[in-house]
Length: 80
Image 1: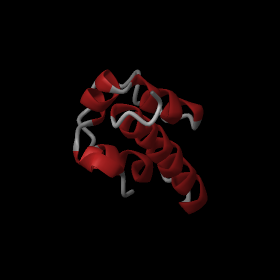
Image 2 (image 1 turned 135 degrees about the vertical axis):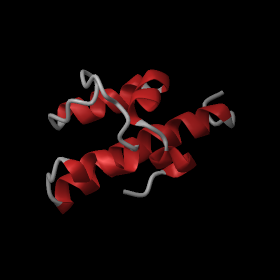
Image 3 (image 1 turned 135 degrees about the horizontal axis):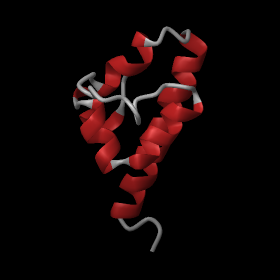
Image 4 (image 1 turned 180 degrees about the vertical axis):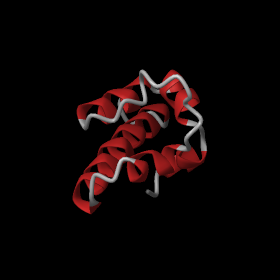
């Protein structure tokens, strides 16, 4: 899974803490990272661990990328 802002290299628990929307996206696909007590998996590995298949993984990757791009555009003043 290739995600912008190198977010794929961060632990999922810290990522969800900073970006609750990513937790919502994962929950939509029944990936329970939000309630997991461990949370040390890297974001880039989370979907693969759950073996949902290439098509679902691509959808999740796109949704997370779209969310992060929205933040980037907002921070750059595109929504002023």
